[in-house]
Image 1 (cartoon, one colour):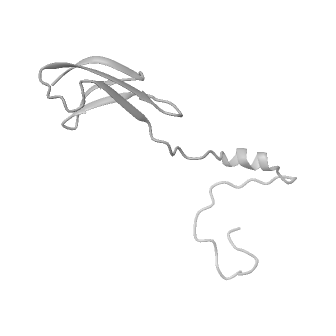
Image 2 (spheres, one colour):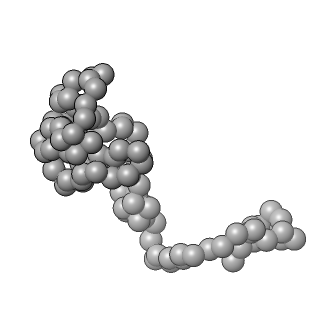
Image 3 (cartoon, helix red, strand yellow):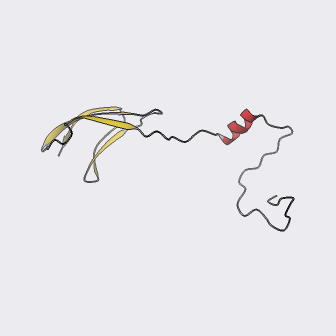
Length: 100
């Protein structure tokens, strides 16, 4: 294994990590299930922040209202200030105070 009929002098330059032998030809559906072919996620999630208003200067304790959505799903939302996490949630909506 690792050589091909047209060129017996060269070997496959890599690793083979999974070999299966069947006593019949597999259907297209069976091959796809084995390969677990799922298209990669190409649509980025969106976040809408409704408070504070865009461009607002804020100090002290402020309330942040945000909604996140994605065509596949949201597992959480995190808010950072100066590369430091301030708040996080596993919800798609966030309405909590953050100290600035």
